[in-house]
Length: 138
Image (cartoon, rainbow, N blue to C red; front, top):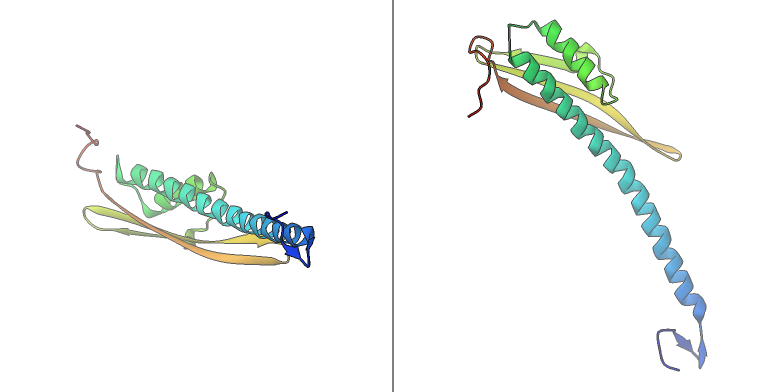
């Protein structure tokens, strides 16, 4: 019978197909595991970036805020995403019209028998609205 099974000396060899399928499944599961681990870290990065954006919007609106107040707000916001920051991880730069917040942190991706470190940096800038009044969308 001619078909999908490899034939050797007139006899079918079903083990070759089973072994190839096993290798494929092992590779698929392994790559899925690594993809899930890295995807989880990317998702966390996007959450932290969103929380920093919220803190920046808060800092740029309303009344004049000190760098200490802004740093505390960033630390609290980012903690909601599961990342613990220290004030040394936050740099705040102000000009007459803009406010820039730069945040850096490290995250470990845990694998069996290995931990992979990743360094993240986010820098966001917003126009100050302290003396301009509230933001009006049209």
